[in-house]
Length: 167
Image 1 (cartoon, rainbow, N blue to C red):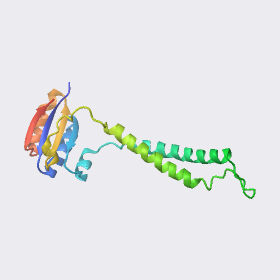
Image 2: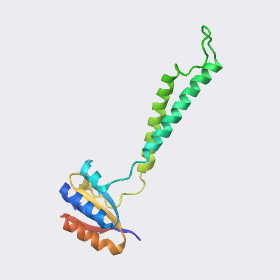
Image 3: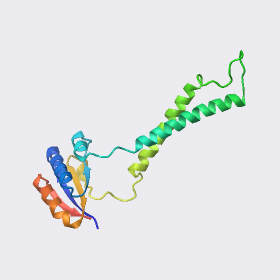
């Protein structure tokens, strides 16, 4: 059964140092709470690449195909033969295909973001404290019960203002 340890930090450098040591010793899964996005924390955590970009790619390609298809279908269904030109030519439909590609790509990006952000979140985030919205930094380490003492020692060593165990 997984439990966890929460450390509250006032300084960014101490937070980054604690995260790096926790990752180096492989104590457990780390969640960081910060009032503003900081690139130092992102470099320390090394998050995996977002799968949302796959949603964007698939949505954009589907939108482009649909945009071309609907334009060609409508011109074949209601043909306007002008001067012997081809009824369905891809060149004039590129604008419509591009616009639908952008629309469907953007909508699928938002859908992917909601799916992978787990919005709406039906349960409270474990380890969150309101002071992490006002200037402090929080490090939540979910680990096995036998590694709780190691996590607590690392968080205290790097200058955590408060360290407490939660479940």
